[in-house]
Length: 189
Image (cartoon, rainbow, N blue to C red; front, side, top):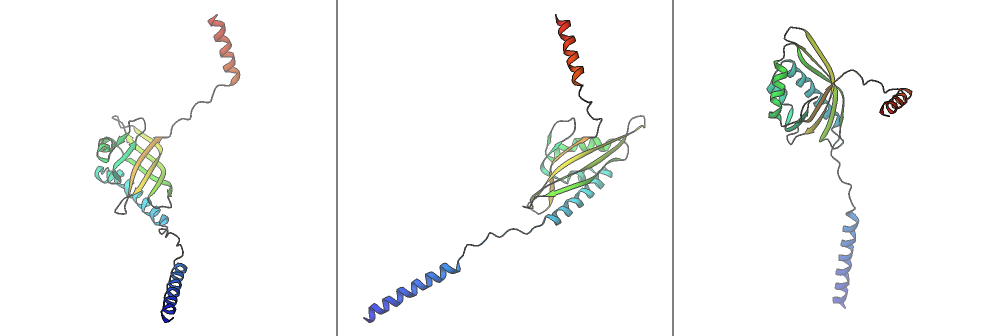
């Protein structure tokens, strides 16, 4: 009997230990990374200021340093350019133009909750002079996608811009379009 009582106590103790272990291991919520969006936005804003200053100074190497190695640039009226070093020629040509050059500034930034990607948009001003010394001032807007790098820095991965221009002409009035079709049918007969 002592043996069966010992076995009973042993089984009861195991049961109690398993029960306690099961009660103490409740499913835990996944730990969310800290929300760094405000700090990330401030970092990107500081990058944009430094990038614009590098552009005003016509410092090609510094201007290119804000891009990731495999960044994509989509210049207005130009072919897509992939890779920071492939962008060099375009930046050198722009910086060779006489005049104050390029300045730009942020209008807005949105950082993803994940803290690894963001987009920034803003306006730019490219003030140059032609061969006769006449001033040319191109104003426009841009959009840059930023990605946090392995070292924690933010680099531009996609850069697109386009100049402000004259709005599209208004669509022709319906009556005029209908009259044009009638005239076209008469001349075709």
